[in-house]
Image (cartoon, rainbow, N blue to C red):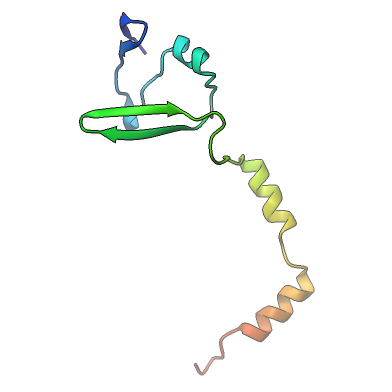
Length: 93
C-alpha cells in the first residue's frame, strides 16, 4: 500500500478490494490501534471519518471462544430428546 504524505494529519491512500484502506502505521501507533481492533466509521457529506474507540463499546469474540461457548451451552442429550419429542409438530398438522 503506497501513501503520499501531505502533512502529519493528512494522507492520500488507495482504496483496495472490498473497500479496504490502510491506516498509516504512525497513526495506528499514535492511536493505539492494533490488528483486529474496532473503530467507529461515519459518513458526513463526502467524508468518511474513522474514530478510535478505546475501548470499543462492544467486544468481538474469536472463533474459538464462540465454538467453546456453543459447546458448553448445549442441552444434555436426554433433555434434548425429551423436548424434541414434546415439541415436534404432529404429522397431521
